[in-house]
Length: 338
Image 1 (cartoon, rainbow, N blue to C red):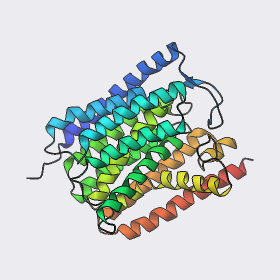
Image 2 (cartoon, rainbow, N blue to C red):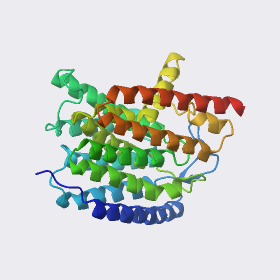
Image 3 (cartoon, rainbow, N blue to C red):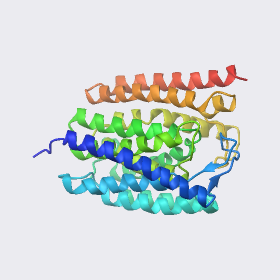
Image 4 (cartoon, one colour):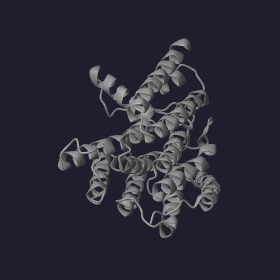
């Protein structure tokens, strides 16, 4: 029997999680200030004042706790649920060390690859991510590479106030809404909406002017968890949804990487060349860029819903046009201000 959606209890849980995450973030900020754990401006930063970093130490534990507390009330959970929790905890530990000591890129990548490999190994019950277009082994390998890239691009894109909290809200809420529209398992709705609720509690502290940042300890595990949920959606046949919801982040990060590769720049070196960073560098306010991403993400959520109703290619095409328009506006803003 298909489990019905516990709408009102879930709505109440989301509101409570938002409030608890807000309070936990306040407490974490006080601790970070007390111990002088600050994000100093560098080549990648779009801020010029030192601010606490490590807000992910509030957001991620609150999200994982909420997922675990809901587990007994769900008839089933997506394949790999337990290892996704453990992988996120592992990445919290590694990323916190990186925030404190600046681990080498090789160590970071190895830790992330281990979490992704473990996640894929224990997602055996999931279907093929690429809808049978590839042999099973190649299907898993390519899914792992994309998951690993998503973890890193989510970190790369966390460069201005509010942007990653906004993206998490959009992906989590949109994923849950799309799962509901497509008649998928209730657990996907619950996990997606709880992720959005936790990010909503963090957002007031990270909105411009930000009072603290996620840090790698937040952006890396959140990217890992969202990547897992998006892969589950693809395995459930909703591949278009899995591409549409993070389409802006995917395009900005990937095109920026390709541009740096073509110009011979070191790919893992800190920089401020992303499309979303250029207007801020030119003098546009952080919140203006973040609001543009909010509007774009709202349209992407609508297109994801369209994809669930039997129009995946129409939705994908419209998403490409929308993302192209967003990138064009960001470039124009950066030129207009110079």
